[in-house]
Length: 324
Image 1 (cartoon, rainbow, N blue to C red):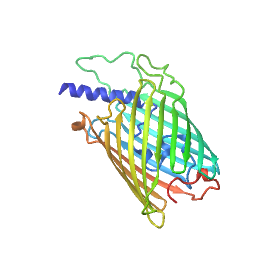
Image 2: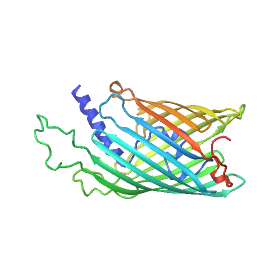
Image 3: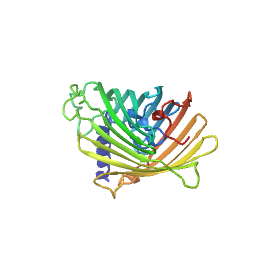
Image 4: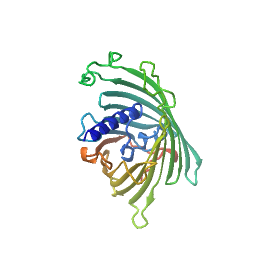
C-alpha cells in the first residue's frame, strides 16, 4: 500500500513536470475545435467560434490536475484568420495561467483538386508559480527547505509554429510548441528549461455511401516531448449525423497509449456532443487503464461553445471543413 501511495505521488509530480507550459490535451480538440492543437486552424470555418473547456483529471485523487480554457478563432480576410486562447491550470501545489495569440494564413495549392496549405504562429505568455501555502513539516522533514521563501513565480514568453495540408477530406497538421527554451533563472536544481514538444495530427472525413448526412472521421494525434523523449498517440473515431437544418450530433471513442507500450493504454473512453443552431456542447470521459484505476474514477472533459457571425468565405481554403 505504501508503494502505491508513493507511486501516485510520483505520478502527480511527473505530470506537473510535463504539464508546465504544456497544457493537458485529452479530447478537447475532438469537440470540432482543432484550433486547440495548432494555430494553423485559425479562421477555417464560417463563424466566429468560441469553445470553453473544463477538464478534471483523475477524479478522486486529492489535488489532481484541473484545467479551464477558452478558445476563440475567426476569419479576418478571405485567406487569413486569428485566434486567442486563455487558460488556468492547477496541479497539486503548482499553478499556471496564460494567453495565446495566433495568426494563420491559408493558401490554395490547387483549386480544382481542393488542395490547401496553411501556416500559423502563436505568441504565448505563461505565468507559473509554486504555491507554498500548503507546505508542512513532517517527522522525516522537520524543517522546510530554506531555499523555499516565496511562491516561486516566473513568467515566460514563447512561440508555437505549424503547417497544415488539406486535400479534399484529408488533413495533416504539423506543429511545434514552446520552440524557445524556458527562462528558469529563478529556480535552482531540477527545473526544466527545454519544454519543446511536437504534434502530428491527421485524419480523414468519409461520407456515408448510403446517407449524405452521415460522416465518419478517423484521426490520429501524436505528441513528442523533446525534454525527456516521451511520446504518446491518440487513435480516434467519430460519427457525425446532420439534419436538414445543418444541426448535428456526434459520438466517438478515443484511445491513448505511450508509443513504447501500445498494448498498455493510458486511457480510453467515449465522447459525444451536438450542435444546435449557434450552440455547441460536448462531453468526454476517459477511463484510466493502469494500476491506478482503483484510486480514481477517470477524467472528465466538458465543452460548451457558441458560433457567431455566420458568413461563408469567398475563398474555399477557409470554408468550413464540416459537412455543409
